[in-house]
Image 1 (cartoon, one colour):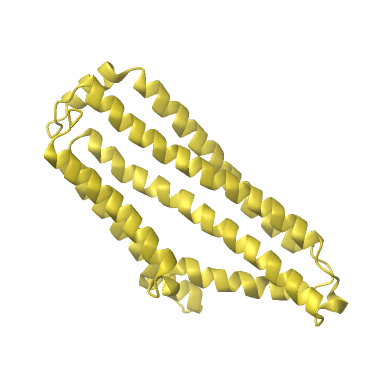
Image 2 (image 1 turned 90 degrees about the vertical axis):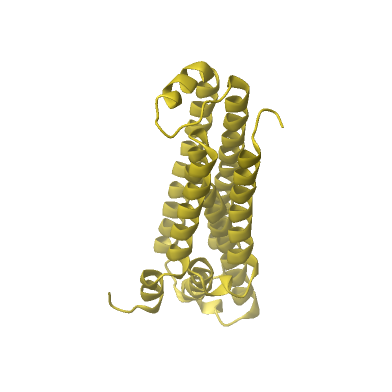
Length: 229
């Protein structure tokens, strides 16, 4: 189909399945609730409850600003990646010659290579939208932080609702940031397809193992539980 072999289709199905399956597992299953991302969601709620009791909240604003700046960096990086991918699409014949010199690379056509570039472009566009929306959500969180009632009203329902509302927005921003970063991780695995389908499957498996270890590995558990390494 469109110049792709059966092995290519199996490899891209494995790539999509690994990415999608990991995303579902980490965000929608009971196992995912024990991962690093979801544990930090609970710490965000603790953060906002502590913020509510503070009279001076400049530090909280600085934390949100630093999170926003980090998100802006990744959003701009994804734009650079999009531009680089578009530039490579204009030089498909040169890229074919480069990969043809690799001992394990499979000879391909310009049409197939351009389809692979389109897939990579879609990944980076997806990452850009996730990072840019996360940036916007952190902006909303800063506004909600400024609208939080003073510390003397921390025990009132209005104060608790304001803190919970800010925590939900920060959590949502973090979730979209994680999705964008996940797209970057799996884009590294996708690059293996430019060599051959086997490299794509192996690279995707390697990315999957690394991301799982980062979520559930002993180092992550020690960090969250304040245990010593």
